Image (cartoon, rainbow, N blue to C red; front, top):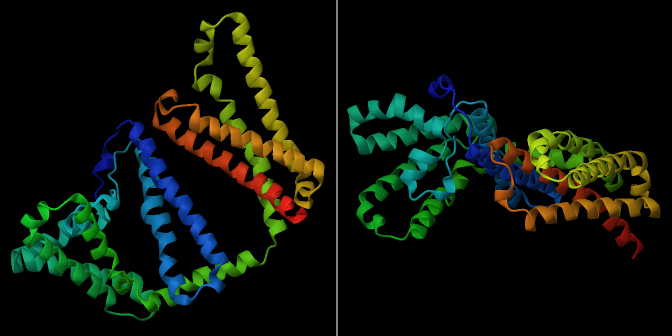
Length: 364
């Protein structure tokens, strides 16, 4: 709601890279759950699928995409605030609705509606009217596309307004309670009546068709087709690793750092780097040339897939248990690059490991 952050030019810092990671992981989890629910959609009843099916969208959008987007804008040197500021850490409904959840709505209400309501009906009634207004706006986004369920979102937000008034009137009592209790109170109040907001008409008209249609599309392809496609992506992915690898000498200042070593040790390091580079190229080329043999279970191709899987698995384990966080260079770009590279390595392990494991299971 405010253009003020775009009027400043502020350098990004380490925390902006960490923010990318905090958004990136829920987004990946949301995509994975969406695909899993879609694939299993015809084996689930409408009610559990409609309710559980909301979770991937919250993970992907509210906890995932908005964090990644905020991080990227900050890397663009504009200090924008978080749209959703750690909602899981809310210490009360007022903290949740007035500070942490959906900042554009908060800023809009504060700038346009809440002060006007306060002047005319007093603060308590203004709180209720502001939440009722939020309910009307959510009717447009939820009940209107569903073609029914009118009134339930408004009732949900009216209930939230009442609960905030109760919380404020019991503020002295609440302030003496453990933080765990106040957080449980917050999430029970937000989540328990959530079926009022995302009512059955919305779930039936919007959520369920998404999973059914995506599930229909996923079911049109065989397991072999998926393995072949993933191996194609894995083969090409090795050349993405090269994009990072060729930047290592300049980014990590090898010319300066290795200059402190003896000539022999310096040559050994360059030699190791060159041979690892050639090995990654070989992994990518051999995957692209022999991926169909891997899918078909040709022993020599499976042996190569096992080698590649083991190589990248060891690379992940070394990163987890040998390197420490302080070993990595500082800067948000290194945090983001580190995360993306490890994601790619994990994709390699899962792809080659699934192919090898599938054929081992068939042969047994």
